[in-house]
Amino acid sequence: MGTTRVIDTTDPDDGPLFAAQKKIYPQKVQGTFRRIKWIVLVVTLGIYYLLPFIRWDRGPGAPDQAVLIDFSTTRFYFFFIEIWPQEFYYITGLLIVAALALFLMNAVAGRVWCGYLCPQTVWTDLFLTVERFIEGDRRERIKRDNSPLTLDTVMRRIAKHSVWIIIAWWTGGAWVLYFADAPTLVRELATFTAPASAYIWIGILTFTTYTLAGHMREQVCLYMCPWPRIQAALTDEDALNVTYRYDRGEPRGPLKRSAVLREKGEPAGDCIDCFQCVNVCPTGVDIREGSQLGCIQCGLCIDACDTVMEKIGRPTRLIAYDTDRNVQARMEGKPTRVRIIRWRTVIYALIIAVVGSAMIYTLATRSTTGISVLHDRNPILVRLTDGSVRNAYTLRLINKYRDARTFTLSISRPDGTLLPGATLSAIGNENASDERVTFTIGPDQTREVRAFVTVHDEPRGSLPAAEQVVFNITDDSGTARASAVDHFFGQ
Image 1 (cartoon, rainbow, N blue to C red):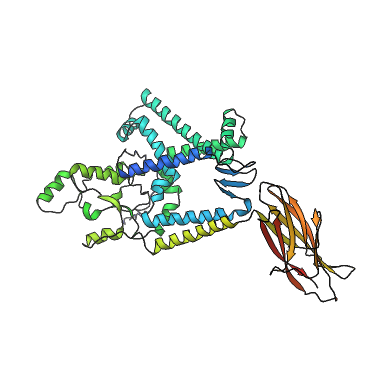
Image 2 (cartoon, one colour):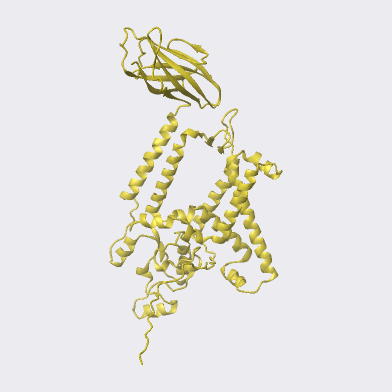
């Protein structure tokens, strides 16, 4: 009788495609990097919440809010800078500079943006501070979650979530203040007379802030944010990253056993396996396992480890901002060095300087007026009864100023000379001569003008087939000028 052999083809590495969230209880820590994070948190949140209330005088008829995205006038105001809709390329430039600045920070100190400046990090840190203040530190929170519900626990949780919702609500409220006059909108919100869109957006941002900072926390960094994956492709061996110096920490072991090994002259590392670096990590990473996707380079594990090293009388900075190249160099007995200035960082800095300088130059030299021209396509030209040739154009004149201005329209060749025998006329002009016409354009408005250029063709057929013509506009003060080039067709 034969036997049946069953072969298990299941791959032992195959696991579930979904992993349930493991709750993390970051422990309170004190030290250099914690103080830096406190400073960044206070400064960034202070700017975000208070900036809409700062005033900036721009003269009569202009909003006096320092930072304002004004949809009613399609303007973006930032202190003395005013961006018009047709200047969206400045926003593109800012995005380029921001991206390159992120690359530069990564080249210098890894994910320092994630650890200190990312909004998710800042608000999560604030929510954790509230949770720690109301429910206690790590041990107390773990004990409460693993114990039966009591009235004290319920009241503390209600208080925590209430404060979280207040913070989230004010976060959403502060955001909408950037799109309207802040004091006016606050008064309207308080009296329930604000636009419905304001309440809707406050509700959306309250929900997202409460959810992301209060509940999802490290899940945003691990699964939602693309930057950790992009960052991994941009780093190199000279970038400063939070690093466990395994050349000094291994072999790790309990304090007493390490002391015995040292007395015997046997190798013993400084790491005593206390797990304090893991307990304080906001994403639950064990930095001793090397660089990981979850590490946001906040440096709190450095503070925790330094505290332990000081207590046991060992040198600090067992965990520190270091480079892979330096760790390898110490293992080989070679000197170490930090190379912040290298080709990668220099190139990033140069591109930022070039793009930034170009934006500053265009801002400083931009005009408060503009003109565009479109030649009639059919017919291209009209021959009049007196033998002259006329071309028709549609002009768009722009007054970007907050006051009405009178503009003079004239024509010339690209070299500035006048077209021989040419006359300029327009429909609806207030004042005209053979070479120029005058128009008044209201504040912050555009005006469409039908213009005609007529040139005498004597003798007949003497005009060129096509010649460039420049349309120039100048305001009544002579300080604002703009021009546009098209063609005059003679045949």
